[in-house]
Image (cartoon, rainbow, N blue to C red):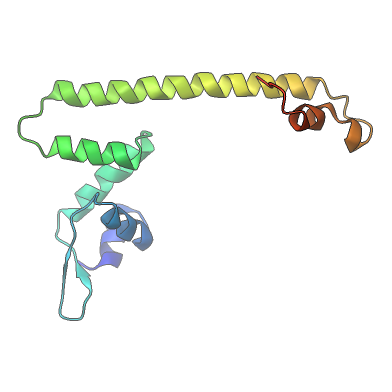
Length: 134
């Protein structure tokens, strides 16, 4: 299969296919006499795995680790579960950080009357002073 057909089947762009190839997330395809990439039939499954893992919040580095684990004969389900649990903990930390940022921004917004000149804007003043916002 050529790259356009592979991209269409996987529901991603041709550029994404090339990017994942450069990142080592999919197997490097053979090239025909004209220099075009010729992908094997299993490439669509590989690309869909990468896409689904990205949708679940895994980074490209983490996806590469999952692929290595997936292709290792001695890896158990417990090890994959551990990777997923680490990702959940990471997401929980990010949620906590985002809530702190939101609360700080709400506090700043509530301190602004919404009238007057920019020079007297408490939001910009707080940011300009580089004082602790959170």
